[in-house]
Amino acid sequence: MSIDVNNESGTEVDEQAILDIARYALARMRIHPLSELSVIVVDTDAMEQLHIQWMDLTGPTDVMSFPMDELRPPAKDDEEPPQGLLGDIVLCPEVAKKQGEDAETQHSMDEELQLLTVHGVLHLLGYDHEEPDEKAEMFGLQAAIVDGWRSERGMTGPSPAPTVS
Image (tube, rainbow, N blue to C red; front, top):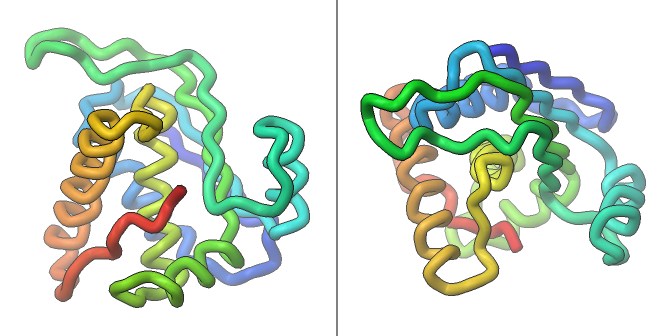
């Protein structure tokens, strides 16, 4: 898996954890090991510009995903996954920090960024949360991936509850 993490935010983030959880999520979703992903960490001004440009919404958001080849997980266990460019995930640590502090189960900015990375990966793979059934599926998968990753690393305590909009 080729994953690039580029921190342009000016905020110190755990880039290795972002890389690791993205790799874990893609492996769990059975995405071809030669597929490519880019994760960009930006400040609030850059995120607001992207939010306005692509969603026509003011203010910064937590995560945005920009799919390229529209890769999807294989439908069957014996199906060979296609290789390609997944796309870009853009994260905003300042928004993540506030969301972590405001969450029902308060958690760190880095924990929120890990959750948002998985959220972004799932969006790149075609998952959405506009409808209640889609939301249940996506957020359930997101929680399972984050919990699995945390468990493999011996991290204790509950994983962050979804705070993404």
